[in-house]
Length: 306
Ligand SMILES: Cc1cc2nc3c(=O)[nH]c(=O)nc-3n(C[C@H](O)[C@H](O)[C@H](O)COP(=O)(O)OP(=O)(O)OC[C@H]3O[C@@H](n4cnc5c(N)ncnc54)[C@H](O)[C@@H]3O)c2cc1C
Image 1 (tube, rainbow, N blue to C red):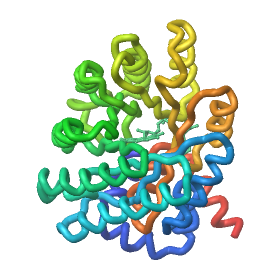
Image 2 (tube, rainbow, N blue to C red):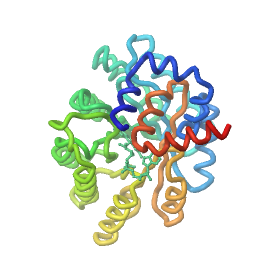
Image 3 (cartoon, rainbow, N blue to C red):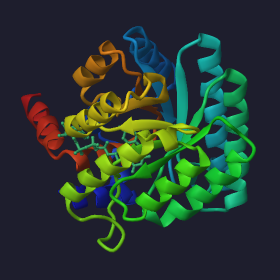
C-alpha cells in the first residue's frame, strides 16, 4: 500500500484525474488547511489560540520553469508578509524543488535567499524540508551555503537513511537547527532501512544525539513525529539530562494526532504544527495516505455513507 501511494504521488496523469474529483479535494482538507493564504492564516490563528506554534507550507514541488520557481518564492514572501501584519506566530517550511532545484542550484539558492530576507524582516525563520534521497546532497549544500549568509534557516534529516547518522553529527558540529523526521519517500534498501523497527531505533538514537549537551551548545532540535514511543523517548532523555525546554520543540502535521498536539502544549512543551495550504495538495495528500493506509478506509467509508 505504501509503495502504491508513493508511486501515485509521482504520477502526473493520476494527479490530473484525482484533483478534479470534488470528493478527493474535500478528503485532502483533513490534512491541508485550504487553498488560500486566508485559509492558512485562519488555521494558524486557531493553533496559536491553543498555545501551539505553526510552520506554514505553500504546497508545491518539482517546478519545471524559472517563472514557476519565482512565483513560488513570491508566494512565500506574500504569506510571510501576512504573518507579520496579522501578528500570528508561525515560521515557514519549503521544498527546494519548488524553488527551482531541478533547474539549477544557483537559481534555487537565490529564490530561497529572498524568502529568508523577508522572514528576517518579519522576525521569523524558514526550514528547508528534505525530499527524496536524489536531492539530499544538493539540499544540504544549498542549506550550508545559505547559512553562511542567514542565521534564520534550518534543515530536516530523515532517520530512515543510513547516511543520517553522519549528517546529524556534522550538522551538530556546525550548530545547525535540525528537524528530525522518519522520512516520507520511497527509498531503495541500499540507502534506507527497509524495516520500520530499524527506522524507529535510529530515530531514538538521532534524537538523543540532537538533544545532547554538545549538539545543544549551538544548535536547536525539532522532534517531528506523531509516534508516542518516539515522543516518550525524547521526554525521558530530556528529563534525565535536564535539557531546558527552550532548546527543543515537538512538531506534528496539521490534522494528525490533534489530541497529542494539545496534550504536549498543555504539558508546557513547545509544540509546532506544520500547516500546508494551496492548490498543489495532491502529492502531499498521497504521502499522508501512504503513511497510514487506514486513512484510505476512513475516507472510503465516509464516501459510501454519503
Ligand atoms: C512537522 C513534520 C515535518 C515533516 N517534514 C518532513 C520532511 O521534510 N521530509 C520527509 O521526508 N518527511 C517529513 N515529515 C514526514 C515524516 O517523515 C513521516 O512520514 C511522518 O511524520 C509519519 O511518521 P511518524 O514519525 O509520525 O511515525 P509513524 O510510525 O509513521 O506513525 C506513528 C503514529 O502516528 C500517527 N500517524 C502517522 N502518520 C499519519 C497519517 N498520515 N495519518 C494519520 N495518522 C498518522 C499514527 O497514529 C501512527 O501510528 C514530516 C513530519 C512532521 C511531523
